[in-house]
Length: 208
Image 1 (tube, helix red, strand yellow):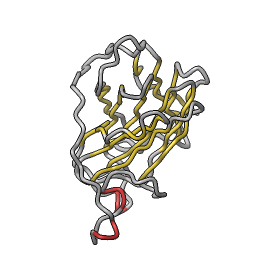
Image 2 (image 1 turned 90 degrees about the vertical axis):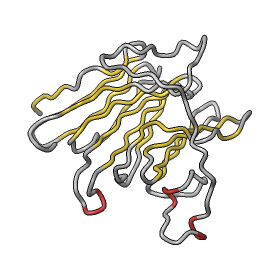
Image 3 (image 1 turned 135 degrees about the vertical axis):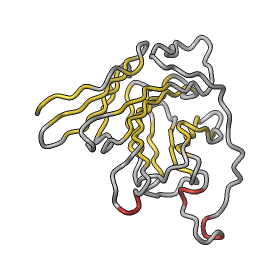
């Protein structure tokens, strides 16, 4: 953790409304609703575009440290990737419908930090992603994202923490009703909890 404290903005972005699916309501302070829009991004082969890494184009199923994918027991999959100067994007796969189009989970022009973490439980998917002004030079993140997708995975919520070293891990309960984001330092344990129907709680910090 940097600068002696945490500045957190708990924001919810409802990308696509889910009628009749028991989705989470917007219950947090500062809640902001937005209609889903899919970026019309033409797939580009990185090999044909010098200077582009795979994270600059929509996920293509290949391994890449800037991309992540998780499989659900029912055959669905969730993939996330970064797009340069655009932010964090999500796609999900169903055996019946195939892959969805990329949809923005969090928009920023800040440089992406390497690595996206995805965990699942009970049909809920939790994600960790980070952005930083000088991430490529080894500086800590300046924008740390905790995100949760539920139901048909057309609805995602996210929590932004500014000037924070980033969440180290996330766990999801087997029933999918709670996700807990954790950051441990030598002196403190910082946590952020998301609960179905309640959203994100306030960040807590306790001595270890």
